[in-house]
Image (tube, rainbow, N blue to C red; front, side, top):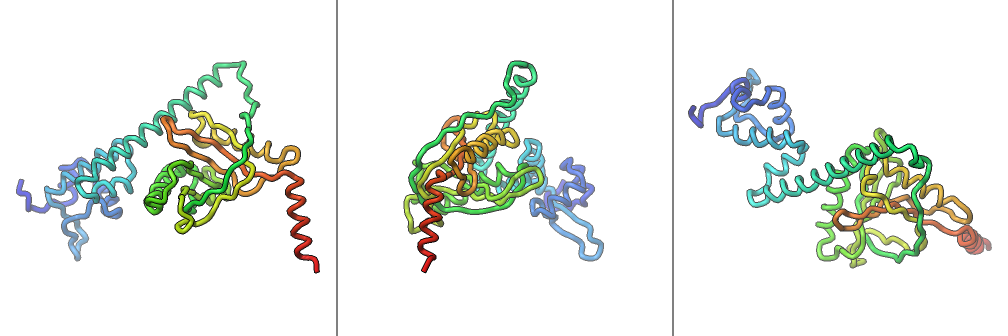
Length: 281
């Protein structure tokens, strides 16, 4: 077959084992454009040389890579393509490990009659120091939350550059509910050690936190940890302040905590009294 001959969409479909429907989808997404579209008939024609790109798309889709990431791989310089595929492999492996851990946890819960289903995780308290951050806010549902956090973090770390503070963890703050249908908003905060590039500063204060087991670092199992925080933050003399958040620290596996800033009731009352004094003539 001549490498310069044009193939109809049907012929190219048979050559690549991609349906015409899939080819049209890849065209709309900019992944695989026809070599020619007849302006009168709308017929699409491809060159045999495009079959290699088509097969690469097929293989990457077979391992579950989203079309957006496939586009990034195909459009990247040759020396970067392998790194992008390796990064996806690492992320896919971590997702698989979390899924397997979750299945193990579910199996244990089903098979064990002695497991206390109503007990909430243990909540700790600590003082935290202020730190500066760069941030980005987005909306997403639970299904796409992990990939949005990953991409937003990468963009913020790139933006921070040499100011990125690797000694502090990543924070994901929830300014609204995130579920299968609710979409936040969600804010990712990456720590920096240069106030000049910062978007804001996390104030110092008191914080409640829960260590989240590795097999529960996903929706909806992580909600038990948030439930424990919510109950503890309104107990006794405490009053929650600001959004609940997830805190991620590097490691193998990484460490996840959920946390909630809070005030003691007397501190809250004193703050309100001081505000009234400033307002009174």
